[in-house]
Image (cartoon, helix red, strand yellow):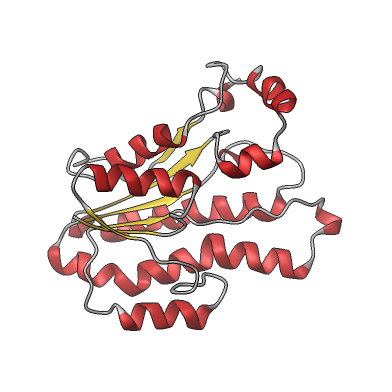
Length: 220
């Protein structure tokens, strides 16, 4: 299969890329210079330049997470968060879905977040974007179902990525793990395994779902 993955340079996206590559699939992972999700003209250019490319699976993984109380959110942070996390994935699907429809088969996986399932302060823009991406998933599951295109959202919980290591001290990680029934953060490859199952021949019937991979955090 031919797989398009955004945000594959590190973290969960990189683990997804490695999983698909290890299983013998072709992965297309544009760099920011090739596809700048903050720039709508860059997105349009990438779609134009790859209009003859047919993707069997699109994985919208890239995202940003500006943290601020509602009264402190800047216009720039708000618009950038919605642009990268919600508008860009919509435009990418819009640009490449006809190839899937012509084959009457395909997979679309939008990477959501635990913060699109439960709430935490300072995440208004991020939570709004991640709830929005699942709204897109729901609609497309219905719209594209007749073409045998399966669309799902994967919502990771706390995951041990490079960014997590920068932002969460070992002491804070230990405290957060007290609220996770499994008692630990996920490894990126564990999220990748779920994404791979949903976006491979293993999945023949599951669509329109918000699949939460959080070690039980959200059911406390």
